Image (cartoon, rainbow, N blue to C red; front, side, top):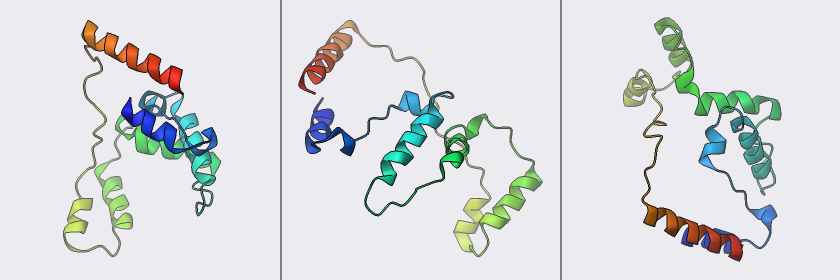
Amino acid sequence: GKFIDYWMGRFDSTDDRLLVTYEALTDGITGPDEAARIANFLSKSEGVDDPIASEAIPCVWRKVVKYKDEVPASSEQQNESRRRLGAGILGQEAENLKTPIRTQRSGPTERPYTPDMLKSMDEMLSRLISDW
């Protein structure tokens, strides 16, 4: 609750904050729309000019969030891509480009909460709803 109290109290206007949930951002249906909301929000910030073209957002979202689900490219395609991306890079950085990137977006999908934990969360969320 303290985290939410801090950020909600720090900005006077709802136009100055954006609430994004992990579940909505990583969902296959709502994710691209959430990414568009983030891009739109950021574009309103001073010094940020069109962070990304709106038609490219779903593609970028898919590459960043869902790339683990994609069919892997052949070794030759991966090496060619790395050569282009790694042009002019030497030493350890060049070696790092040879290592396949794996997402860290995995883990348990169930979160076993005790009745006391659920009651505590319910009270905290009720207070936050009341306050904000």
